[in-house]
Image 1 (cartoon, rainbow, N blue to C red):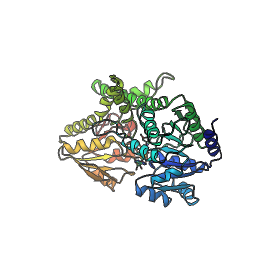
Image 2: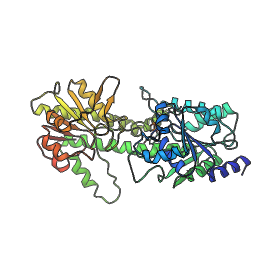
Image 3: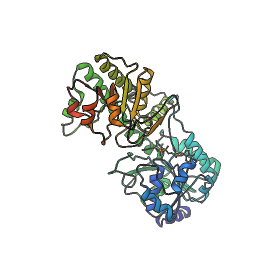
Image 4: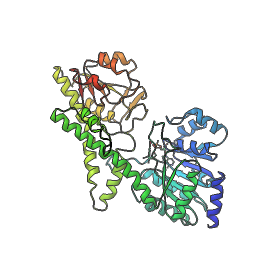
Length: 439
Ligand SMILES: NC(=O)c1ccc[n+]([C@@H]2O[C@H](COP(=O)([O-])OP(=O)(O)OC[C@H]3O[C@@H](n4cnc5c(N)ncnc54)[C@H](O)[C@@H]3O)[C@@H](O)[C@H]2O)c1
């Protein structure tokens, strides 16, 4: 072991290494908490002053982190937070957990990774270990992060500092698999980089899965998310085909799922949502385009999934039509705005598209979501209705978009005039019911 590696390894093993986490969002804050609980001193750095102030007050704004968990760590000094990037110069170990959204054009927006890397490059020093966690296309860590860090600092990865990629896989809202026990794939720029990153993460996380390179780690995450996106696309297309055939897709899926092997159950819905599944595979297809290759499964699944909100709106139009009403002017109540049940996350939620399309067709739209008080979009803003019973009774049609577990579906079925159920939330009770249309 070189002297640099030996010293860093000792600091990591004794948990004396000072840690910084760039980005204190859904990924960065839980990571900071887990490492602080393992004994590290962690500084969360984020340009968003309101997040930093909340952390300093010991108040969590992330559903997966309880304030009761965060507050004692802040009080004991294990977790600090700041908007000051110069604190990076004191850090031995830095995780980068910044956003990787898409631009309006559908291309990857790497500006957050670039900015974070530039800030880090100013303060990079010998004996630092860095892990990029943000989901991105294969090659990002080597082509963008490594190049910038070495160019600005004059230091060499694998000798002076250590750089790796480790994809975040946490499923927001889930309690059985969380940051601490989710197996963590880690690939380094060099074997020494991978080794140091795995040593660091292994101090706080239960299971570390070393792979041979940053590219393998980057691609593994994209395989996972593409797998989900493509299978959801497939089952959504099944729903469209069953609709034409007059066959109940939900019964078909349950029947297929009785096969003890070789089949994995996915369910159709109003479209993809969340920060990962609708976006990450498009990072891969974008990269492949630059290599003259079309990622056909991704493109096709994306097309099918993107059209699902329109299909739901067609169903609303059809059921109103049957009742002699037009969508124009009808009162439509959208139930659930979050992208999945029981979370407060509305990012990329199909509810946004469904509401937008209904509004375009001049419906009088309201929504209810126990977790999302208001929605602000470029061209519209709505607040969740507060009196759910009255809202259901008033609506010409209720559209179930998110099957939150706290809804009383029996009561909804009883009260509503018409229902479009895009999640089979009503189950058997919605089947063959003249006032219900299922996906
Ligand atoms: N949310 C999830 O469940 C999840 C799961 C797996 C992977 N990921 C990936 O993890 C990454 C982070 O996602 P997230 O959900 O935590 O995003 P987020 O938007 O919740 O948090 C990102 C934070 O980074 C901050 N930030 C922006 N620029 C910064 C900079 N230059 N330096 C420091 N901080 C900066 C933002 O203010 C924000 O607080 C993304 O690449 C995402 O695809 C997210």
